[in-house]
Length: 248
Image (cartoon, rainbow, N blue to C red; front, side):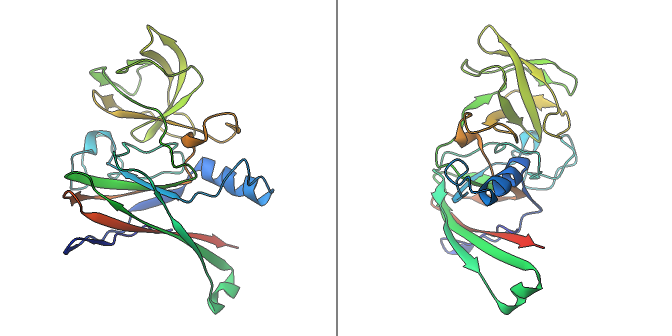
């Protein structure tokens, strides 16, 4: 599965993700759709983008400090973007790619779409999702959230106990809320590892497997990819191609 960059004005903007994964929730989608539950688990045909994770958000080179994972790394346990940008998600055109070689046990579907930047920014992630509407987002106002911290303060109220959020490369669970914008959190959910966060880091709502259809569907993410950041100017565009391969 490779999302790749396209043209941007007169400048060629090319990239290949350094880490691409169908998420845990995405694998559940595949199982549910194969079971015929297409009305409840819709096909992921929307493409979004955003910045790299946490401490690496402003970096254009692969980082050497916390988080210690590769910049913008997309892992199977991710439930949301690291920091989705202001641009609207785009509806992808989907095409089944067939050839004689598919008899070998691999079939592909491609999802293509182009996003145009509304500002000067560095794009370091792309994702494939079934929802056009963006999920709830908060930002950390605690000065330092260590890997062992059990509480944090966010910029505003509105989150609920029992919800999951993407915090850099980690997924956290809100165990309870206090004073509206103070979260008591359970760390390292959905297979992720606890990591340090800081003021200004983005928290994005997301669903883990088993969340069911009653949780907001805009918290679902099918696949996530990170890549070394592309520095874009206003009106630069990137054409993304997601190739979803099923191999027997």
